[in-house]
Image (cartoon, rainbow, N blue to C red; front, side, top):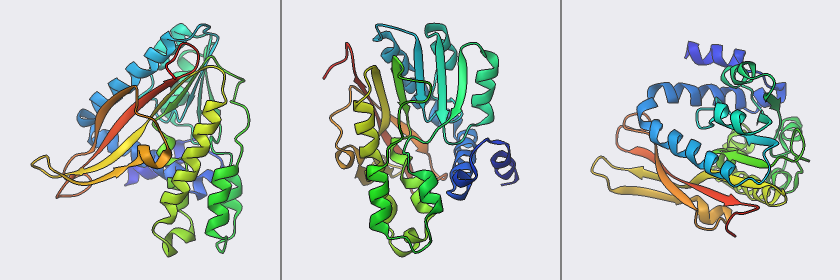
Length: 271
């Protein structure tokens, strides 16, 4: 717990991001990776491979943008820096790990604080009595603006789409009054992110949760939550499983497993 608290102090983030719980979430993800590194390794490797496969589709290699860079565990930063003239690591919370990546290649890699939803500063300023429908509409309609650093040849949305609305919504009083409120915000933010990505002219790769599973010790599926259908995604071009929280990390009775997909779009990419 003390280590996570120290971590929240070391990250770079706007004050409103801290109020929405995003600095704490960044620390919690880093802590879970420390506890579950072996279980996470295949997923992280598959994510890095998908990103490099998308890079291979780029006709030009001037700039690459990674949205949701986090600790860059799932991002092959050095390989991207070897292929592109500039690499931007974007996130609301800039971790020490991401900043170290930038220091290793200061002529090629930059860290930029950026809100992919375009909604979070206004969300943090909302009153506790804010109407949940208005908050959801904010996620659905907010405009994050142009990509930080300009339009890149490659955009990577790195394992963040399902969390864009979910994590901040959980910090709001409306979540205490309505347990389904965070999921509705997550769907609105995810669909808005997809429309923003679709408007970009370069190669895009979306790496995202397609489903969340609760898996019993015998391998039977106790619960399945279909995020692909909820977000309106087509079948992925690549798919794999992420053992996010093996027993007893999430529960003594089941493991939390995510089905993850990679979707490629843009020039030289399948429709």
